[in-house]
Length: 352
Image (cartoon, rainbow, N blue to C red; front, side, top):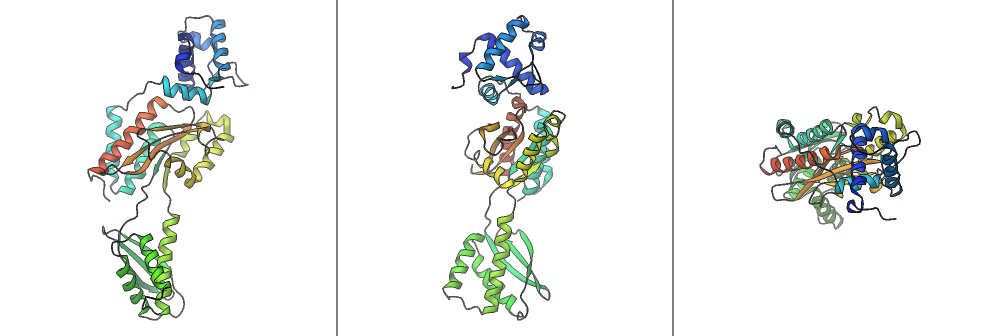
C-alpha cells in the first residue's frame, strides 16, 4: 500500500502525528494518549487513541510490544521530514564555532578531521567526512639508502608535498641501482598522477624500451608497488564520535548498536553510501532501510557534498545516528558545514 501524503491526513491526524514524531525524536520514548492529551491536544484520550490507531493502520506509526504508546515508523519519519519538519538553523555561535575550528585545524587533512568532530559534537551522532579522492600531480620519487636491505622512498608532488615510505630491498643491490631507478622514476613522473605514471612506466618496461638493467627495473617496480598499494589502502572516510551512539536509549537495544558500530567499521561501504550524495544539489537524508548498509541497525544518514573553488564536488560531510536523530537541527547543520568547508577551500583559507 503506498504511503499517504500530508494532504491526505485530516488536520486532527496531522497535529497528533506531528506531536508523536516530535516527542519521540526528543525523548526516544513511545507517545501515548495520556501524554498527548497533556501536550495540549483538545481531545479525549479515547479520541486520541482512535486517531493513533488510524495512523498505525496507514503505516505511519507502530506500537512497541512493551508499551501502549506509539513511535513513528521509517515511512512516518520520511513523511515528517519531507512534509512537516520545520528546520532550526544553526545559531550564530554554532556557525562561528564550526568555521573557527576548521580554520584553526590548519592543513586540509586536519580540517576534515576537525569537521567530522564538530558534526559529532553538535549532533550527538557520529560525524563523517569523505575525503577528496585527489590524484596529485607528481614531481619526483627518490630512493635513499637507509641500511642493508632497506631504503626510503621519498615522493614529492608538484605542489611540494613530501611523503615517505620504507622500502624493502632484495639482497645484493648494486650501489648505483638506487640512483639509476630514482632518476628513471623522476623523469617519468613529472606532471603525471601516480596511476598515469604506473601505466606509462610499466608499458615501457614491458615493451623493452627502457635502458634499465635488471636490478634497477626491480627497484622501479618495488617503488611503484609501495606507493600504489599504499594509495589503495588509504581510508577515504574519517569518522568521529562513535561513542555518541551509546546513549541511554541505545542501551536497551544493544544488538542494533552493535550492528551499527560494525557497519561503521566497514569504511569502504560507508563511503560508497555517502558517494550517493556527491551529485545532490541539497542535503540528502537516508532513513533506516532506505539504505542497504544500515538497514539492519535501523540508522539514518544525513549527508551533503562540499566543493572546490570551481564548484567541483570534492567529498561529502554528514552525520550517522539512530533514526530518532533531531532532523530539524541536524539537516541544516550538515548543510551549513558543507557550505562553510566549500567556502574556506575556495578562498584558500585551508592549507593544502
